[in-house]
Image (tube, rainbow, N blue to C red):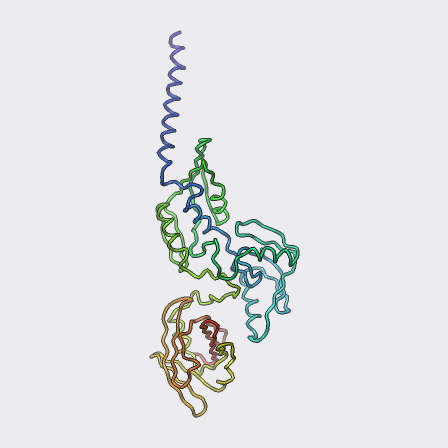
Length: 355
């Protein structure tokens, strides 16, 4: 009889010991190394995961949403079915065909848009489109999304609810999942991230992150370090992969460059330089010939990617003398173009004689 009484007592004692040990384990996990809702880090992570709507601005002129592809558009009167981002370049080519025309684009209704929080909406007419577009910030204005770094997925972890004392595992595979993960964190939730995780900075470099504190510092330091390209000039960052070696090779391997475009202070001046040929040499010299007239000068380059600056200085030809930013290098068979910009001014050389 005594044995029968002792058994449940032992079981109860063991259960209490087990529960206390489990609670102690949870308490040990809940500390400053946990991610919690409504913190600066949670906000930074969600802003990094926001849907960036600026990549298709050539179509919708709106930074805070994307148009879901495929979609049919009319660009300068030509119908194009846009199936992927590669087709944006087709629209750009149509717009760039002539410099003195007025470009226009029309989207065939209905179509779906994806908002910054990944909500999807159906747009039935231009009025609805304008309503969503007008809710976005203007070109290159400060907005919430952080585009200067990206998470490398998957990211794994767990969430513990201090009210229900339930733990759930999480696997985050994309930005939408990351946005929803932060959005769903409640005041009674604490989350653990399994480190290390990795982020990709705007320059393509990868950073290994080993703690929440390091993650917060990396995002804070990187969030304003790049041009987020929130304007409607599609592919004005054509030189993401450009290098000084590339500009050196194309300028020196091609001969007899001509002025395809020269716009200064809203004046088109290329016709003033018909018949002029420009040759660039490896030693930084430029020679220019126009009938019996000869000119000479220098050129240098510095920087990388979209920040390559080419300094041109030609005696007797002041229209060309400036610190030009390399905008684009086009190599299409026998026709090659190098496009420079300086604010609203533009200089484009063209050559059909390359080694």
